[in-house]
Image 1: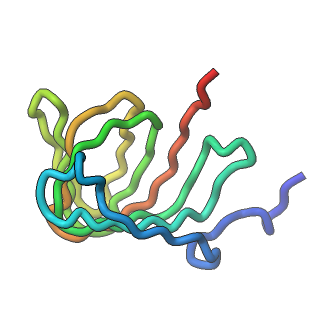
Image 2: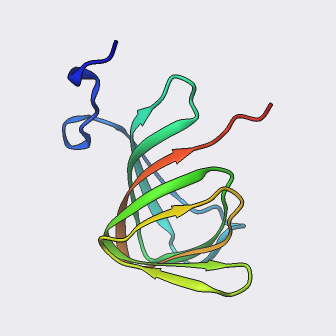
Length: 122
């Protein structure tokens, strides 16, 4: 049985930080620097939650996972393969469904919370 001591408060939990840039074959423009601090992974390894930070840049994405996000700071633009775009700003809550393909563009340094689920392949 879980108790309140099992609740993960990001600001009190020391997550594992990973810094990286988008792969060369995905990068379109800019440095595309990113940082992830994963604060939680469930026992199955399918569900993850944490904080993501991104610097100015634009890169191609292809989602195999479902991701719920809240943009905390910055300005982000998502574009699909048909050229449709959505601009996201602090306070926006959104889900990127598995199967989304397009571009992720950071127009002002951004930070978001994320919770993602990726079904294991059977």
